[in-house]
Length: 288
Ligand SMILES: [Cu+2]
Image (cartoon, rainbow, N blue to C red; front, side, top):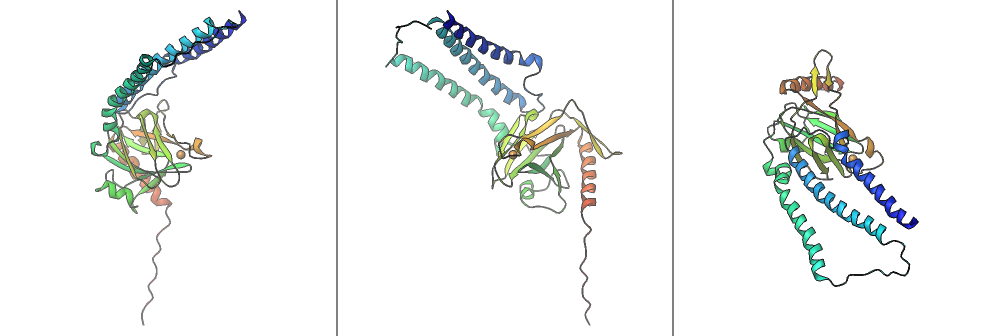
């Protein structure tokens, strides 16, 4: 009898683990709020895959716990092995193969929409982000959209402003980011935007998003951005990139309107210029 206890114990642990996940949506342990136009496509795929894995998880664990309970502690009893059962082998090859094929086809349209450069919407706002150990440098042009965004992303311009760990945009803008890394692999991850992209050394990778909600208003009199505390949207590094990986965090500031963004940009430009040393003109030697 005491052997049967292990089967019960194992089953109870699995059940508690499963229930703690199953109650997640009702107690706030679930996906962060979605504020991206393509978020529903990503979430749909997540739920499809979660559905398949949950079904097979329950099926296999129930069988395992049942077998542990039913067949434990029978001295002298020999296990049966199934060998060369072609029908069974076909079944467990074709079923997972079919599921993988279904997922591969189901994700095409979402992947196309999010990742294909040719399908990316015309940008309203262009910026360039450089990852390094251990922060993000956001580079903004003096205008939301440079004439040639791709060329701008490659060549530093004297009017650019650089801000660590702050991504500013406005609600409804098609934002195009050119992602680079200065050293090792990093991964730009914005959970609320359902956006994740690795940064690869030597490459400039375009990514895009369009935020459907805002969390920020620029206060011209204080020169500060007032962010809704209940909507703190984090930027994280999703690629283990060294000892300081955990502190590679930034924040996403989505302004309510384009005007609000432009007011902030103007202020940020003035602040950046006031930090620069004054240009010195070299005196030209007078000729005799
Ligand atoms: Cu990193």
